[in-house]
Amino acid sequence: MRDFVQVDVFSGTPYGGNPVAVVIDADGVDDEALARFANWTNLSETTFLLPPTPEARAAGADYRVRIFTPDRELPFAGHPTLGSAHAWLEAGGVPHNAAEVVQQCEVGLVRVRRDGGESGDRLAFAAPPLRRGGPISEGDLEEMVRILGINPADVVAAEWVDNGPGWPGLLLASAAAVLAVEPNAALFGAGVIGLIGPHATFSQTVAPATGYAAVVSVDESAGASDADTEPMFEVRAFIGGASPYEDPVTGSLNASLAQWMIGSGRAPRHYIVAQGTRLGRAGRVFIDASDPAAGAPDDVWVGGRSTTCIRGTVLL
Image 1: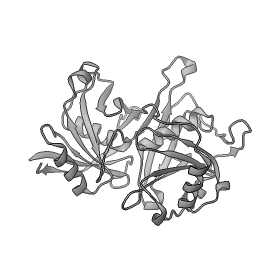
Image 2: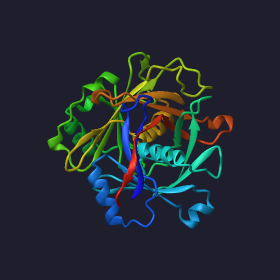
Image 3: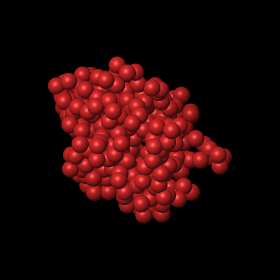
Image 4: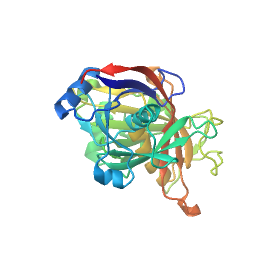
């Protein structure tokens, strides 16, 4: 029997975020057994913690994680990264560097830091580089809007923002427009689609150079914090496959959307995202991007709270 937890990620309220199953020590378990267990949990992701490879350990990795959906293995995913780091620390893991945990996964080494001001009760991961960026072709965009049941004119901007799962990012005019989308599951193939739109509590203006820019009153010298109670953007993530579904809160998508939105001047360096609203969840994602102009590394940090909701052992 192996130690197991189920962690709710990206919400300060238990059962308000996105769950991930974490097997604390999966060393020696074969690939078939890992895939079978992930299929059995039927969660969007199940993770398995392992010792890092010698090469990764030498580079600073504290542990290795393998991330499975019910039907495939992923090179990277956001909420499983934070849930796995939470579980590893809670199980007594001690990082080489007290300031951050270093996770090995298929995309490489991912840094996870303690965040949240004095309380330090949030974890945040450094967004990995995009595997694919750039404009979405007209044909691909037509297919996406057909699946989503919207018009091409409803899309303010669209880019590939793929950091592993294959994300395209579609910017709509408002959070209300994002929340109104009713995708046609029968038209969904095996792909994924990410949506983002600004909340009406913030003023927006169309900028000729970028097509869209969010104009907000925020202190760019401070990170997104609990004092900023209102989300600036609404995000939704749709996952295709045999049984298409909407993901409650999605770290990988929020990471790549932030890289795109901040990099193109459509969002400030610090903001909060709401996700899962249509599913009755209360997901909150904290985005903090460093300022290269001030000499800081060009990092985007994606953070949130995690709560262990189930603890026990599993047969593997």
